[in-house]
Length: 342
Image (tube, rainbow, N blue to C red; front, top):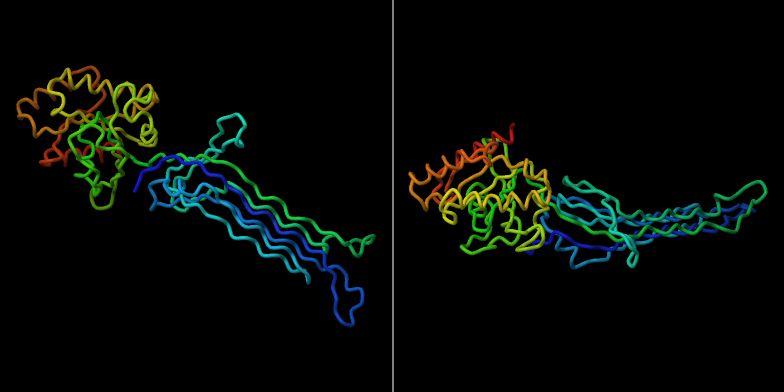
């Protein structure tokens, strides 16, 4: 399934049904009077959160959503049936941006977001039904021959932007071992290969902590220099980091062989985060050396010691693991649980 995190849709709510002009006609009841019923309400267009969805792909194939008009009123004071609402299911974490009519200037505004399962947001309300002529009877007009037409339903254009909901986001350069790590601590099975940009879309995994707690982890595609300006995969996936409570920065010792190279790799990603949103850097609490099965234990201890003494790591915990051999995985999970609990 393709991962689509942005889509534009047009919606048209249903018009209200027309009120009815009718007069009571029954044997032995002369001058029965008006009995025209009201029109029914038009259908609303509603966005509804669905925890089983993780992409906006469906909305790329269907761009226009229309609700039906309410039924017209009828005689004997019978109100027309209201039209059914149209529900559009969207993944959790979807932002709803109201766009100006086509051809008009402006970028629109954020109208709401859907963060919970079955949470709903009405984006276009159906029109109210018109009143029948029975409503307009008075002492001076005992036989009104008019009724209200139904109101028009609302319409609009919207941009839906998906930002994944994860408690922890794994960040780093391409080939830092993010996909391998998330596959070892959760049931997620992202594509793993030894070439840049293997991960072309974010992946979500659920890591169990103890018997009753779980942590949702996101594997974010690799960042490169000038990603905030569109280089590599650009800012397309940086938005998925925004909701994460904590960032884990992965550095590969297989790709970077000494402390200086590791610091340079760290600075590349840290710079892109800061340029995209300054507060994201403060969420980075853990730096993890990955692929440690490719170097000796003595060399690993040297790198850890040098990194922990570097000024950039003053407020961050530095640890190491190998997702292939499982070394350090338990300590990593325990540290995540401790950080999230704190």
